Length: 415
Image 1 (tube, rainbow, N blue to C red):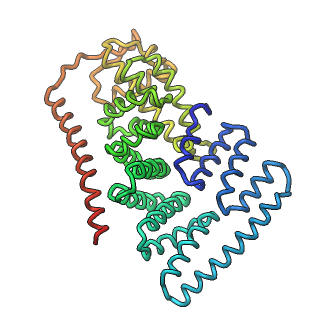
Image 2: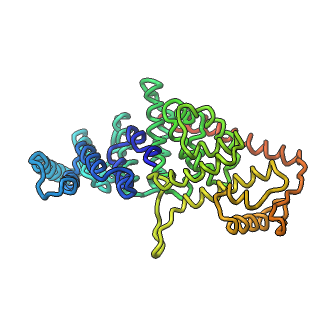
């Protein structure tokens, strides 16, 4: 399923340090030949100060303990520079005198530590630098670095705070051009996926951010592949089903510039009512999730390994199929429906029985004929009205948020 791998597309919008975890995942999944991944790591590490790591990768790639002379020389330079910057920082602490030169030293030390992969010290120095810096552009650069460091240390709560702070600045800052602001929004969304698919409230967070008009426009303009992550969040988030209609509309608009089994599954089911096509796409969706660095996170439980998001997605996708199929059929063959859910007959029958028992579904199972009989439902105009008000309230809240947040950020900036 390497044909659906988005790493190459994502990498262009990420710091090179953030690409390394993606390559590690691909290496574990054996999506590409081992030597290709190792070569990609070596190329990526050339832009960093992580020389020891680069040496280890080189040894593994070529099966030797020898490393190129330029790596040895580069390592000596890095160690020397790291030592001198450490001494400069010690002097700052001892003298307790802060001026422009000391502030610049703090920035250079933070940047060098980050490039060495020493993210904890980098985050600490960047925090101190931003408290002292008066240069807006440098402060913004430091905030990007702080966000990357927190992501790489997997401090998801702190990373989310930095992400929101960065968003406020991007939305309120006067950029040199609209294109520059657009690029910053695209970077922010790419970086945010690390957080949203690890933070406990991330599924709501990605929906809230990506559906904001300016960010949705950015996706459609230059990053339609991000629809994979938005679509997945909507599918697994039962409380945000009200965004499904809007999502389907965007997927249809962008189908010529981007599609994958996840977006195609939704299109088959909710646009074409193609249940056979949806069934096939659901099989492909599982492979896409398992091979995606953000979606395919594995959890070890005793002697077994689970992929929680895969299980959530399949459960909710089957529920989509079931609900849609029941909406247009009155008498449903359980065996046929089980096939469309990619389940064995006994599994499908048990799943449907539990669903009918635990939900308000107005249906009954005829065990003799092996059919599910749907009772005709009359449309409740009051329920329809209430649901439409909910959708209107959601869109109004998002619009108000788009207006208020930049204004608040601008007020804070002028204080």
